[in-house]
Amino acid sequence: MITWNLLHARISCTHARIALLLFLHFLLLWVKEVAPGSPEYSACDMGYLNSVLSSSSQVHAAEDSPVSGGGLSQNGKFSYGYASSPGKRSSMEDFYETKIDGVDGEIVGLFGVFDGHGGARAAEYVKQNLFSNLISHPKFISDTKSAIADAYNHTDSEFLKSENNQNRDAGSTASTAILVGDRLLVANVGDSRAVICRGGNAIAVSRDHKPDQTDERRRIEDAGGFVMWAGTWRVGGVLAVSRAFGDRLLKQYVVADPEIQEEKVDSSLEFLILASDGLWDVVSNEVGNDVHFFPFPVDNYSVHFHHKPRKYKRVKTYQELLGCSFTHF
Image 1: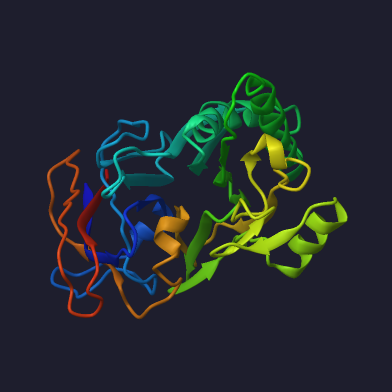
Image 2: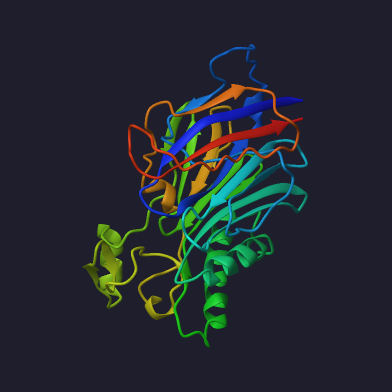
């Protein structure tokens, strides 16, 4: 058994909601030997990271209290962990999903973070339906990018049908990662971001969809909409993202067409992080040696999630301090 512990990951939070985060670590890099007492196993400059990994095999839905867990693929090629916390909020509108499945004889991993707005309905619906729609697509293996795009739009269409009797609009961002063999396909709508660590460098592999981006603003205006400043740039003066699931009243302008990027899984790819804007609003992709892996013994299937509001001399705001662990057998 090889056990690693992720320690001293910090995030300073300037608003109440703490980010939802999903962390995927590629097992192929764990073959590197680390002598006891070595200062670090792997490092990626990912900022003050509100994260947690555990070796729990349970997968939980987002809840109104801190939740963390993780698992290991049946073929032993990768593991994953997740964590969420509403911070000071009374309820949680963010959801995540982790799914390991077999498709046409191939073991695939599906991971997603869904940040709801206007209530939790859209985020919960996407969590429950997006991946099942994707793996049932006839071209999932042969043309995965097209299947992802179709699944995003089909899920959005079906959700909108279910919203006909709702008086209040609901919507959700999505950041997803699909692992098929040695291919990693990252897709997103909205501002939940995906960042990989490759060769020790943090690299954003998704683009935040904001209304003030030149191409997004042009698309919105060409469709008859407008973008205006209301505390931040907003579609119709209302919505701060330019792509999302749901948002029925703005659907003509706020599309669910994902941007998709493919990465090769090789020895330089260390891990992937998916997180909602609650993390990325206060953390840059790279902030100076803040994520380290240390060889450190922990109990099997233990969850290390330490929720501790505190002051930190560098940024005097509300913080989360978390210890994180994951295990490979």
